[in-house]
Length: 350
Image 1 (tube, rainbow, N blue to C red):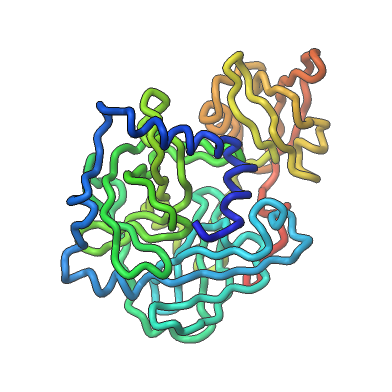
Image 2: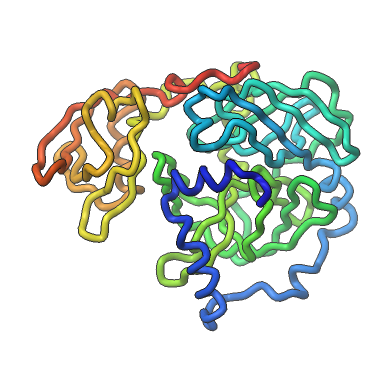
């Protein structure tokens, strides 16, 4: 990938980028794993929706303030892809837009189009851009990402690509990001592609079913370490979309956030890898190197368990108790969760 921020993102948030090369090496040895053949990859999207897909994907270029908190991990200048879903609306992945001061789009004809961040949805990880001048591009309809067959054929297209790439949807396994991010049924695809950030994932009718988010080290599970890509399903956006377009945020209470980046330890508990400055965790004295042992007195099993139970306690602003191990000693700390967006500089336009 040509986007330098992506390396920083995955290194700091996933804390496992070292495993990609290892997984790629192992993939050649995994004879029992389903493979996508060269002939299948070469198959193009059916002719009728092809032109609409080709003109729907745009380049997204954003710039944030050097002092913005996300500039340290995502970079000040970011570049990826987006997909036109309305007369003046582009859907992309949210980390391209966090704390962005400016956003430009470049279409398939090379036109540079100024835009503004309309919304960054922390729950799904998706982002919306509203253009400041007419796009004059056909919007791509949103497909049904819930009822896609697995395995099944899909196509992806990213910025500056002249033809879609055929992919296989191979699983919908739970994904829990170390940065308090949870997707219960993401779209996991093979083979792995490099141009994933904000790229579109399309069905055979040329409908948009997913937005590219990450390169993951295993699309099947720990038993079959095979790298591929994670796409965020568009159905997660359909219900909140009108509110996001109108107000820039979902209606109702915000998702709770603590500001902890962590990963599961083989010996049990969750290792704290990073604590966001000024976050509830930082205010409670939780530090890098601590181990999270329990929430409300119940042992933490893994990241999905942690996030599900955290959200079950109530929205942002709920009080909770974590049991942590620090310096060889275990003790309890009380925290008041908050809305993550409150810790970020509001992008220009929201």
